[in-house]
Every structure is written in structure tokens, then in C-alpha cells.
Image (cartoon, rainbow, N blue to C red; front, side, top):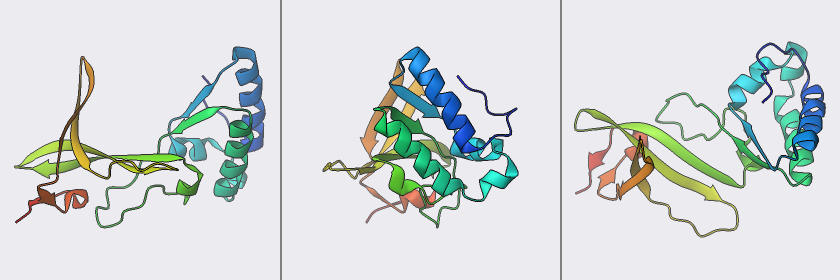
Amino acid sequence: MIDTRSLDLSIDEILHDLIALINRMQAKRLVIDSLSGFELSLAPEFSEDFRGSLYRMIAELTGMGITILMTSELEDRYTDLRFSPFGSAFLADAIIVQRYIEIDGQFQRCISVVKIRGSQHSKDIHLFSINDDGIIIGESLSGYEGIMSGRPTVSE
């Protein structure tokens, strides 16, 4: 684990440290949680070209055979279906969206697979919950419209 909160580095410096750590640990997977926090950890002069620098870093790491999971917190602007505040969705082989919605005056969680490169995946939006047994994927919300608006209505 590399805690970038106290660092003030360039992506190249972080990549150098990551590669050394990956080689030492013989890691196969890397998690960046989250892209927003990662950008904030960079020295200000390196934040301007964050998208380009992130692309180069991802290319280098995937070229090494590393699987990368990146999380990205988005503003809850339900009218704007963006999947990354950095315009970096093109980097992802898969995009899964999780969102809170209101149904019958209660917050519910929903999940949907937006993209899996080279796959004919389900486009359904499902309720999900997390409990002691793990993640429970529930029923499809096919009887609703406007789910991603945050306030779905029953389809007629």
C-alpha cells in the first residue's frame, strides 16, 4: 500500500515507486482508490496534465500484465451521465456504476454494468445490498423509468 496523501510527487515518481513495489511483491493487481484522491496527492504543477499522465501510467502498468481497479467518485448530478470527472473512461476495459436512488421514500443502492470491452453484457440496472454475506445482487429494475435520475417512476 502506498499512501499518497502526504506525498507531493509527479505521476512518474509514483509510477517508479509502484513498479518497484509491484516487482518486490510480485503483485498482479493494483487498486487506485480513488482517482480524485490520487489527483489531489500530486504536486500542483503535475495536476494540469492528469489525464495524459494517467494514460501513460495505465499503459505502463497494463503492459506489465497488472490488472488495475480504479474507483472514481462522481458528483450526484443525476442529469449528467458521466463516468469519470477526468474524461478517462476510455482507459477502462469495464465500467460498473453504483448509485443511490430513491424508491418509496427510501434510499436504495443500484448497480449496472455500463461497459465491458468485447462483451455482450447485461444492460439491466439491479438493486444491490451489502451484508455480512457479501454483495447481494437483487432484482432488475425493469419496471421503472428514470432510475439514473435518482428518482425512478413506475413504468406504465
